[in-house]
Length: 221
Image (cartoon, rainbow, N blue to C red; front, side, top):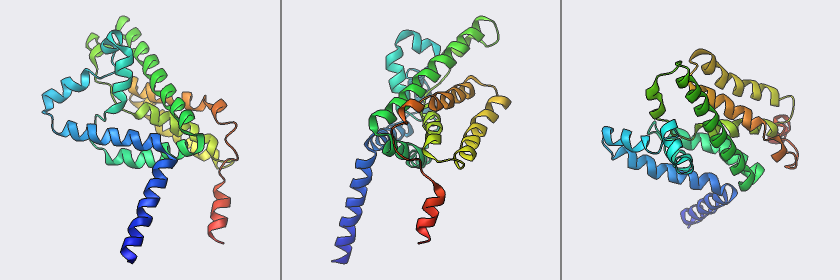
């Protein structure tokens, strides 16, 4: 009987978690099935398949809406579990705090704007001879721009002075690769962080910021 009660409590807890962040859970579920699908593709077919869903210059010029949506439904690394952790730590927390619509607005803004601006910069680089012409077909899929934007907007969830070390860590995580590698993807990630920080108007009415000190005090009783 205790096992049955424990199982029911587990089901209720899982249902409550899904209800608290439905968008995150649906997105993760889609990514799980698309990742499984990738593992059943041959390497050559997988590359061609993903390239057709990539937000590179070639595909954006043909059907921008389609590739902006489909590119966010695949993980090019083929590893779902790390993203499940990241979605739980960042996306789920942001969705609970902001509500699904505002969270989705941050995700869309970061994903779409960072993609378009970084690809425009790449187009200019190709035109000026600073990047090879074949870069118009670069494989560019994934959910990292939306994740970077959400990580940035969560800065406002944390009360000062704890907010500033978190912001410094986020900036360092994305600025260091931009300074060392200087790829257009790194540029896109940095743009996503700026876009997330620019979403402050969406968070102003979301209540008191979280204070880690108060949480620790409550845990200590």
